[in-house]
Amino acid sequence: MSASEPWSERRKNRVTVPASCDTCGGARGFANLLVTKLPDGRVQFDPHVTGVCTVTVEEDAARTVMNALARWLG
Image 1: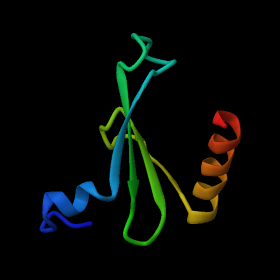
Image 2: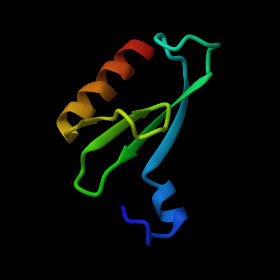
Image 3: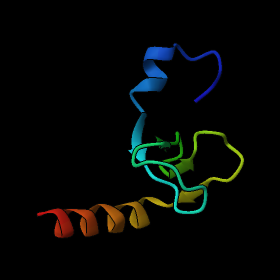
Image 4: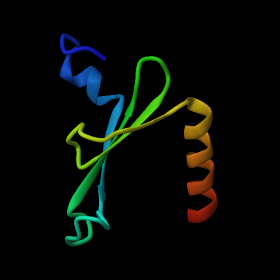
């Protein structure tokens, strides 16, 4: 993903999830979690959408998260 890429194309690889931050407190949905599929196939989680601290996982790890959520949520 590059800055020169059209915004509509970048949006296809991103989703913002309403979340709560247990460290900062605040109401449910107060914080956002930005999840981005990177060009190399990895998935990046950006709590608070600040870019200050991100968690990036390989595709296999992202599938593990996906499978766990599917199992927990039915």
